[in-house]
Length: 173
Image (cartoon, rainbow, N blue to C red; front, side, top):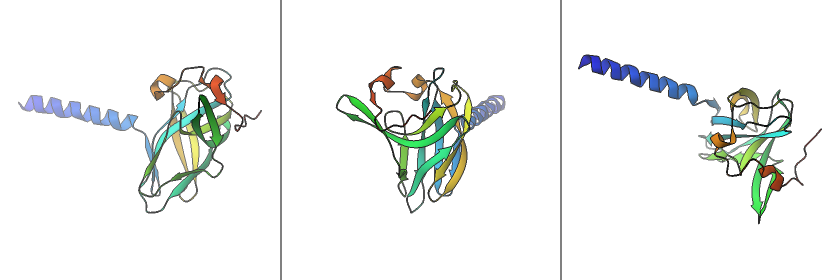
C-alpha cells in the first residue's frame, strides 16, 4: 500500500506543478491579472487582441489605462459591441474601470487590449511581454501567451474583421 501511496503522491505533485506552470498570474497592489492571452495573427496583420481577467481585491476601484510593448506601436484599451448586424469597436480613452471587490473579463467580442501597428506576426505558443498601466496600482510587466482563435474560443470566424465598423479605430502607419 505504501508503494501505491508514494506513486499517487508523486503523480499528484506532477499535476500540481504542471497546473501552476500553465496558469500564469500576476499581482500588483490589489489587482490580480489572470492568464493573459494574445490572439495569433496571419502575416502582415496590423492588429491583435489581448485578453485576461483582472480581479480587484481592494476597497477602491482602479482603471486599466494603457500599456506598452516592443512588438506593437501602440497598446490601447478597446470595447467591441454589436449594433444590429454590425460589430463596432471603440477605444476606451478613459480606460477600463476594475470595480472594488470585483473583476473584469477581457475577452473576444467584448473588452480587450488592442495591440496596434504590429511589428511582427504573433506566432502560436510564443510569449510576448507587455507592460500594463493602471491608474492607481501603477505599471506591471506581464507575459501574454499567444494562442490561436480556437484556443481563445473566438465567437467569430477568421474573416470577422471584414464585418467590423472601423470608423472609431485608428490603425496607424
